[in-house]
Amino acid sequence: MDSNKDIEIKYDFFISFSNKDVELVSKIVNIIQNIYNAKCWFQIKDSKAEFVDAIIEGIENAKAFIVFVSPDSANSYYVLNEVSHAMEWKQEHEDYKVLPIVISPENVTYSDPVYKRIRFYLGRLNMIFLNEMPSIEEAVLKIFEQTGYKIDDEKLSASLYRVRDVEAKRLKAQNDILRDFSKEFFDPAIKSDSLILDVGCASGNFIISNLQGHLYKGLLGIDINAELIESATWSYGSEKNVFVCCDVLSDNIDVVLPDYLEKNQSFGFDIIHISAVLLHVKEPVKFLQILKRYLKKDGHLFIHDADDGINIAYPNSGFFDMAFKIWNNSKESGDRHCARKIPSYLKKAGYQKIRLAKCGISNLDMNDEQRAALWDMYFNYHLWVVVNEDMFYHIDETNKMLAEYTSLYEEYKKQYDNGDIFIQLGTYYYIVQK
Image (cartoon, rainbow, N blue to C red):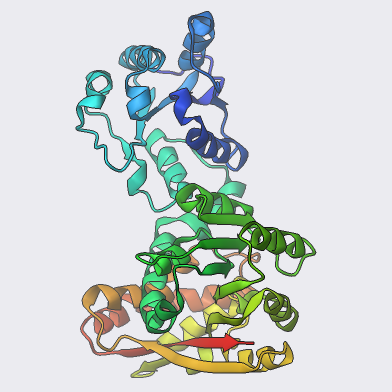
């Protein structure tokens, strides 16, 4: 059987899809091409007969064939022709990859009769089911893993910390625990006519999990990271949930927020939500003053933030002290004593009603899954797998601590899992009004 080595490779991926799915497919392909520099044969129209030669050449000159499987593509004459040729090519070239990505509506499973024809061609190939992926970024990385596409070192260094499996797990765990930590205060404030602003929304997972099961009028999520906003829009965007790339401290905020409020015929937001944001803000008082302009007189500002000053581990040991020092050395960690300063920031910004509603998350009364999640939020050494001068202030000191920390890790993790260690993390929750 021949390999691909003698074939002229022009593309990393040939993209096969139904034109009715172009909006979703385009978002994924844009990330593959623009962020990770992969070359795609991607034609934004149905593959009609006059393009047959170009299509065949594209399939045969790519390293991998990706087909986005939906009820529309599964019964498209053009898509089925492309799949048929790709499978024939795969039979003759052992290095060639064919990867189906199922993008079904939630009420359609792959066993549905609508997929009968395309299943005939694809057989038992490994598949990616998009609705099972936590985010669009992880879906893209899964595509690379399945097809063997290698990310160049620069792109890998930039993306590892944010999108690798351990980080995704940590962020999900953090979201679940913080949601449970604050729901007794946040839930009663949500009304059917509430307009909600989430500042630093990232990929939208946390605020959407907080709003799950609630009726509300609208959500505006803003974040300075364009990639995360694209992910939030892809995962949760709708007429009701809007996500915009914007920096609160930029002039653009006074365009984005008034436009949104005007469209919703409101003078302000009923709820403004900020989680783990202020510790990263260089001008927190100005930041809070700007948000105050857009908070209704009877509205609520909810703030989650961290302060390592009340982190507790008992029995105390150098192991946990090293973890706290490593976090403090990280450039991405922000002000590790931020939360205690927030009342002062709020008063200077002109807020009158400030309440510390809750303080400290501990592993007491947690089930096994929750305890494991709490540990992974802070102490899993894989969080620091990328160690370089761009991430840490004192790289030599950090490397020494990490070497010692890693050598002790299994011992302390076992004690923790056995229930022999008490941990409290310094999380503060403020409820604020004008």
